[in-house]
Length: 340
Image (cartoon, rainbow, N blue to C red; front, side, top):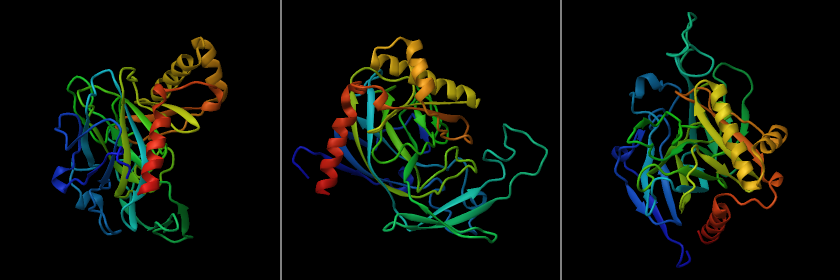
């Protein structure tokens, strides 16, 4: 590595994994611009390893959806923007798992959606992961064709400590980030969080080999991950809700129930952000986003639902988001990958 590129590692032991955002001491403190190589466990804590391992029998609530962290960033103060660029997200094993739960998911009765019909059966699917070919194999449990799916690794859970001393379970998405379950959190994406406490306290986990929008059954192709991120700090300008930037898109998120309010939050944030960046009146920005925007779902299964509002950067010529930190972190990522 170049002398100016600081690289540190974080490999939490099982007893260091956390299951919440907020209230914890940092496992690591880094300076802005640091590259962090880290490991994360899957949402089952690595306990579901075969189709016989039913989560209800081998997992113990609330010890689900562990995250690695927190990572404190030097100089981060409430009101600042914490920028997290995902350099690389790679499955750590040659297998991954998914499941249905009796009372979790978008198409079954749940605690908050009471129905008289029987809940879904609890089943586990084991996926073979071929990291060299970049595929994972769907093998149906009850006959029919197998399907080879392309890997699209991402993190379902990433966020910072909430405001006002609150502590949220890692399964809950909100203004702090958390379990947003959007496939947009993949390598090449920079995620922006508003800092709520000194240090920001970044944590991430819940790696997915791939996931469809909405995560309709309640789980993705769940996998432990080896992940590399670059963390940086922009003083001031902390967004009210997590934002994302890629080379091609700007994105805003909203995570609440009902789903239409999550949609409104994400769209409102994107409209006001576009107006700010382009110098438009808000109604002009509303008109442009209405005609050119996209609205992929994050999750429709968690304690809060997540919607994403997405606008191609080509419709905002010359606009620079978050002081241009995405481009700087892309350069850092390229330098790291070249010398790794």
